[in-house]
Image (tube, rainbow, N blue to C red; front, side, top):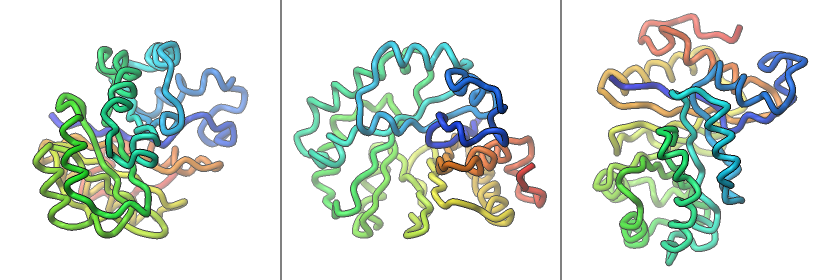
Length: 247
């Protein structure tokens, strides 16, 4: 049975009170409360820092067994080394996530390439050889030269998902390249009709047996978290649903 995992890109936002977090909730209890409403989170913290074992253990303790942590790859891999000669640091990065993997709590790894990184299939293919096949992986390409059939073929060969990212600047083609789907909804707001379309597309994936990971943009306002809660409601991914709305 396919599963839908929905969340936001982070959780530590006091400005989400009182629409999402209760007014008097202490910040140290945010993750526990967040995990009572949503079943996944995309951790961007790991883009700049290697996460500590104690932090990972705290994450595990604060969330239920079905909760998943998607981890954004460190900038050394994607932005500094730009996938070249990155295996040593990659192994170090993966080592910090072993506790999450052992606990069955690790979602996909997200590798977000910089906007000025042009397509290079040889570099991508060589880098992918160093990724463990046991860990789900998604790639977000932000230069248009990547958005073509050769890229899709490279990803499909390794069962790696294309991260379908919606932003105000660009939209990634919604192409299936793995046995799961990955969405980043990065616009500040979405209409009811747009969210209905999200639900319908997710329904197609689930019906085809593909798990779906979907993350809304984290903002100072709680809209993304509320959209995520709404998308997880029973029936939200039915094709015929017409009542998607924040409440």
